[in-house]
Length: 81
Image (cartoon, rainbow, N blue to C red):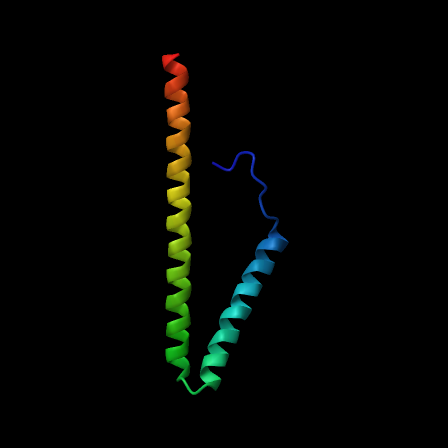
């Protein structure tokens, strides 16, 4: 599944996690400063992040299915030739 792909090293992963956590906290703080209760801001940002991640996962799955379908057509064409 991961053959031929560049994998991230641990420092890149920790950096990405830190960046995402800082962005999350910043948006929650911004919403709280605008007068929204902190728990509401947290729930709204958390729900938006979950929705965003699920949509990215769905797009990746669709792209993989499309790539597998194209590969299967090429394989079938070569088998019939």
